Image 1 (cartoon, rainbow, N blue to C red):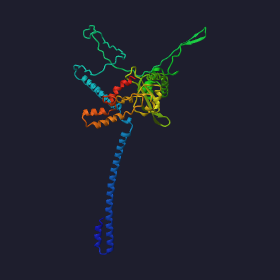
Image 2 (tube, rainbow, N blue to C red):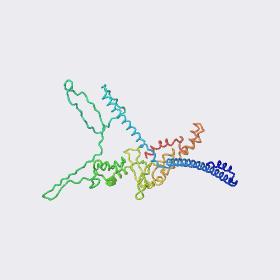
Image 3 (cartoon, rainbow, N blue to C red):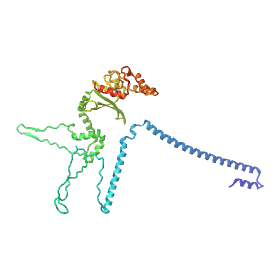
Image 4 (cartoon, helix red, strand yellow):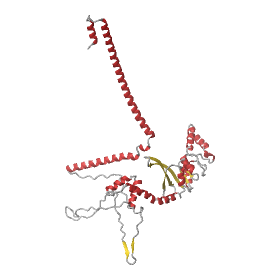
Amino acid sequence: MDLHAELVRLKSVVELPECIVGAVQSLIDQAQEEAAETIRLNEQVTRRDSELHAARIKIQALTLELAHLRRMRFGARSEAVSPEAGDLFQETLASDIAAAQAELARKQAEAAATSEPQVPRTPRLRAGRQPLPDHLPRIEHRHEPISCTCGQCGTALVKIGEDISEQLDVEPARFFVHRHIRPQYACRACETVSAAPIAPAVIDAGMAATGLLSWVAISKFLDHLPLYRLEQIAARDGVSLSRTTMAEWVGRIGVALQPLVDRLVAHLLERRVLHADETPVKQLDPGRGKTKRAYLWAYRSNVLETGPPIVVFDYQPSRAGAHAQAFLSGWQGHLMVDDYGATRRCLPQASLSLDVLHTRGASTSNSMPRSPMRLPSRRWRESARCTPLKPRARFDDRGTRSPAANSSPAPACSLARVADQHAPERCRG
């Protein structure tokens, strides 16, 4: 209904008073203003809703970006894709390519069988295939023809050569049982019983032979297979190996091998030059449901010395220098370490490798060396100051300002060259 048209119609009626017409006109004007205000408010709400939606999307995008940057900056390094994980994609790609080639060869063989016979072509040998190792045992399989006579004329065949091809095979873990039988013999006259003594074992009265114990230890510590996977491997052959039992075996193996470790440490401490460093490892913290940080201290012999290389890992709960001091108690020689302060404070009797970083003419006594970072920083400052000079002037300036200039006429050289010159002298002890 059009209110304005109705108002015009009412004005034509003489009977209506003027006050009623004015009141109706004011109501119509008020209703039109409220309608306009409502439209304006609806537009404003719609605009604000769109702005709020855009702001929420932007906040979400910034939050994701911030989380990504925090992960890149503060995240664990193990979350990054390692080279080993990248190799998995290469292995998958190689497997897919090989499967596609095999399927193509099969299709081509089927097509050739249904089509007209053609002269077979000699397959092209792949280049770069390495021969199989000579130390592997060979199992010969001779394939003789069905008949030793010619199929056309019946004449006896004469051997003129051999076609030899080799295939590499593997025998998976095969479980078997050692059954020890010790007959018992009795002497009727002496009334005694004699039997062969029981052979010594790593675990007394245990069911695991040395081969099984070696397989468990190598799989766990060298192949990094957890015990539950070894349990599954054994279950496929119908052998029940409990994880608890294998964990007990691992503990007893460590105790049984402790004399060998002690002997290895004794041989290591006979060397005059050793390398030492520590690396953090995660250790389970029972009762807390978390892991705590422990350390593996690695000690190894120098490659320039005679004798087989020796590496010993010493497990310790912290990286305090007292652990290195306890391990190297009574040892004297040259120790190659980093600039970790605890090691330097706890090993004053050892001649540390930081002496190697000193320039020619520096003291080689057992006094505590200076920090190796000071020397390269001084070299960089001198290089920046001497950059505008000519090459010969720069060379002379470095020679006059070098700490070794007072003790040797030759100018100081780079850290790498100093290390190369001093390393043989230090290693000769």
